[in-house]
Length: 317
Ligand code: NAD
Image (cartoon, rainbow, N blue to C red):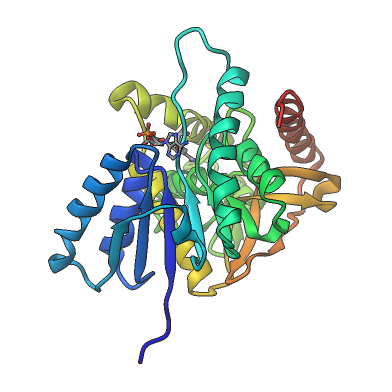
């Protein structure tokens, strides 16, 4: 008998949540049970029906159904993509306060169910909402993860691969900091295969230049604004990023991904949840990798953490 049950509960079956669910079903073999929960039960039911109708074409079988918080008890991962949209005239902090109330209404029953797995948060502002999840759930920090700058890092690797005409898989580079305006690329840590890109820029001045690196960084930082302008929301990329993190956890891969994790002294910072490269396995964050940043990069990282700290401090939990 196959006892290898890998169960994921998705809370929030909107565009982001369902893009994740769709990627999960299509990639196949990552988990074998997927539960959909939404405050709008009819929507969750409809989404479960729609996905189930595609199973005949999927790579592997899965049990998919709309459920409730009791179903969280024996889940391995709870993915949260639930949230409310910004109202006209509403400040960022007001929105944050309303999303905190949404999270309380979600995390309290999840914890009450007896859930003992890993929280993975995608709702924005993701670093703050991950910290809110940590504070409300009182789970160990290794088991509370946000999608952080995982999508931004994928965007960066794609753009750098295009620039150097190299497979993005052979580009080793990270976007770190807040998933937002203060995020940045530590250029000193960007590598093509095992060669520093700063060296390549020096060696091939006729072909490449630092200005282009800055343009690429700006393109990454503003990508979400551009997509929202064109099609109102972003969801496929983040859906695939969530799938990648879930796969790393359930497969105990020990893969390095730039998730939002709680700093416990790394980069001389404590308590803030922020996007940093982490080793991700079956128990969540196994280790935060501390990069050797230049003084200028350290300053940018400190600034990003301060932005997050200020936003969190303004919240009433
Ligand atoms: P959406 O409006 O399509 O979906 C949100 C869903 O949450 C809806 O189905 C709604 O019914 C549900 N919901 C609201 N309150 C709930 C509650 N109390 N309990 C259960 N479900 C509830 O929005 P979306 O486009 O899917 O975006 C979801 C979130 O993901 C947003 O916060 C968005 O900013 C964020 N996002 C994050 C990233 C990232 O990189 N982390 C990228 C894109 C979007």
